[in-house]
Length: 285
Image (cartoon, rainbow, N blue to C red; front, top):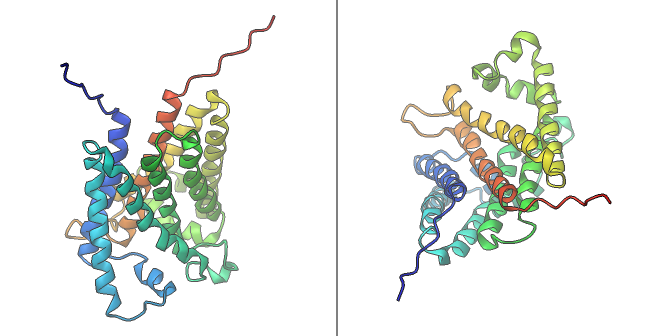
């Protein structure tokens, strides 16, 4: 009998797993050390305000993050673990996302919803739902729209916030520290720079969305959107407050590292583009 030869795992699939695993490994390490960006507010939404609740839930979160750092790699050898991984991703994403229904994350001085404050880190958990869908039903025909949805959510919402003064001030330290972006302050003031970033985000998203219908627009839109999330990752190295003195993620670092989830979605979109046959052009008679 001939030995069954396993198909090699595509490089894009490995890159997706690497993004998920690295993000959760770093989140787990910082969480075990007591860094819990947004956790107190999330617990407040669920009325878990006792001081005794925080250490236990922090430990449970750290364990969940650790599992999510390990399981993606195991799915390369044990396909049966894909659905448990999907369920854990949902378990990680749903409690924070549900907390958005409260007022705790909204900026009251700007009228509350949809002016988002601490929730900017929370809406990023939507990417985990899309990634969970990928592991649960990888061959689904709407996979590209599922992966596009969290990208659209974040770029519309956070991109839209760029037109407010509070967001322009909020990103100033990040932009100023970046060798890729600091030059903008040489030409434009703080608010104009923020507005230009917001315009870029929205334009990139529109191009990518159009590219899901018209293939010739896909790569320009994909590259523009990918640049947003890759630039965010460079802040981990340029922004002094991203890591602690012990090399662990700070609250700011935890916020930034979550963009690896969107890079994973972008890689899945590229995989869809590369594996989807181009519709045949109708010949004119």
